[in-house]
Length: 155
Image (cartoon, rainbow, N blue to C red; front, side, top):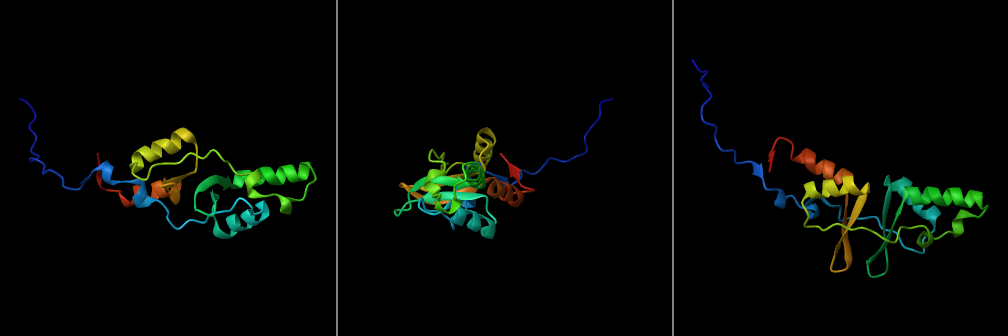
């Protein structure tokens, strides 16, 4: 005698999320703290500490992305300034920022973005539209998105 299931037919769930609708642009930070290439590294360190951030984009007068400066870049400068006995206040962001910046498409879904974070080992990606910086997505933003979606079915 076979086992019969007494569970009725399951209703089709309507809360299935289309991953295409979970775009990076929906979760990115638009109100960014940006830096200028002529700023001193010391000033950047003060802002990073005050704002409790680990880095940020460097832009020119036209709000075009020209680099990224991070805590690690600042730490490197502190180490070098001590080693070479050079005062830090004269050291500009331009000399220490990462110039070859990888960006991410605002239309990418957050699951693909999560994979991109894992593959690249980066903490943040800037988002560019029409040559201008419009936002930034961080690992934390992806985690927040995942928490908001908790309990819903993902395709």
